[in-house]
Length: 118
Image 1 (tube, rainbow, N blue to C red):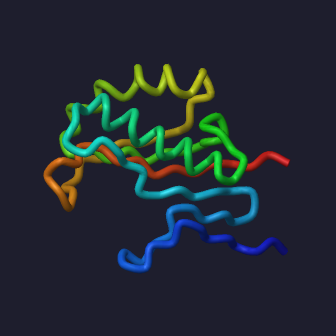
Image 2 (tube, one colour):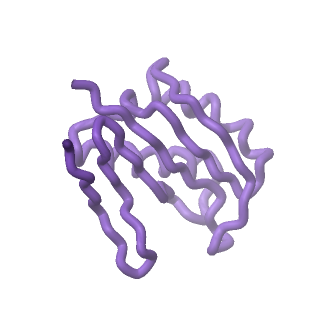
Image 3 (spheres, rainbow, N blue to C red):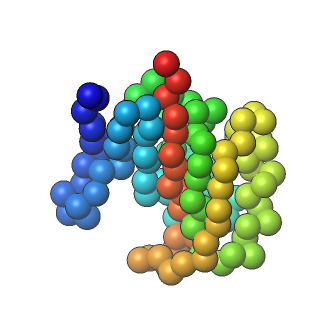
């Protein structure tokens, strides 16, 4: 049996940014470019997601599912084109939600599940 590996642990918020469980990897709380345009925040979140995946030998192409959180769900209209640019036709399943964030400058965050192929 494989072990569960948790990395980027934040004791203050009591969460792990990366959890590897079997062939699946759960990545949470990806956000960047707070206070900037929605396009910059979406790209920034995907930068963080990509960086975290790289630390465990994966890429955006390994992402199979994403939860996309928006301050304003109308900003969903920007997501598709950015995914086309970033995911090279290896599109994950996804869903989008409108939510409140802890700080006013946050407009987008993504959580993802990736699959590690053997």
